[in-house]
Length: 66
View 1 (spheres, rainbow, N blue to C red):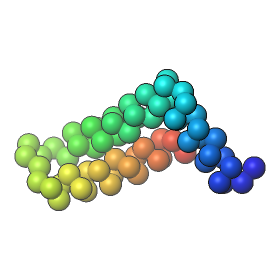
View 2 (tube, one colour):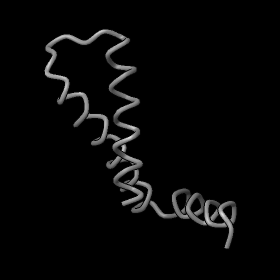
View 3 (cartoon, rainbow, N blue to C red):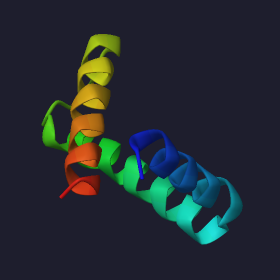
């Protein structure tokens, strides 16, 4: 199976299985929340949020691909 075929299966399952979809949503949200809390800053500007979101995306992919 190639990448495109595998990705189609993943997307189909995310779109058609509410439990899998909720799992992805929860994991993405927690990756952002965890990284947001790690900054230690009380107040965050747009640049901070952008940086946090990028780090959260990396953390999510690291968890997904582990």
